[in-house]
Length: 128
Image (cartoon, rainbow, N blue to C red; front, side, top):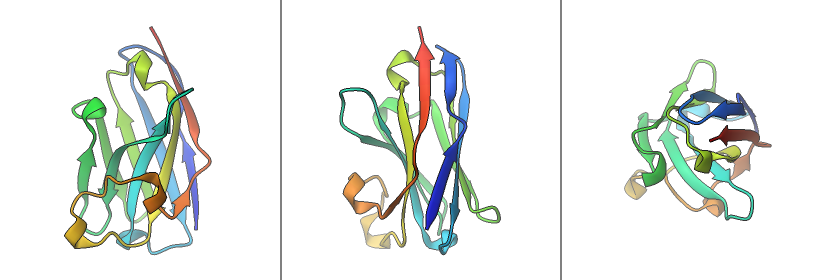
């Protein structure tokens, strides 16, 4: 299973970026895909996820209302639209996949160790 992120870059506060994550070598429609980020000197944190089986989406507080996760099952891709970016959003962003997210768990927001496969990351830098 391979995950490849793209779309990171440098943007001023208030701007937008759209990250992409293309997943290959798996049953994409059964997976849950999460976006995580790690800022310098901080622990990696999960910020959003989507359960591809039912397209339910989940967000953590700091990004709720500003970020939107979506998928395209035909392309095996997940997107993270990031609007109204803030300097504190500066981080390396990773997408990650878990093969099957149990329905009884509900939200796919979880610890990073629960995700099986990871992309290499893409840098997002937001200037003030």
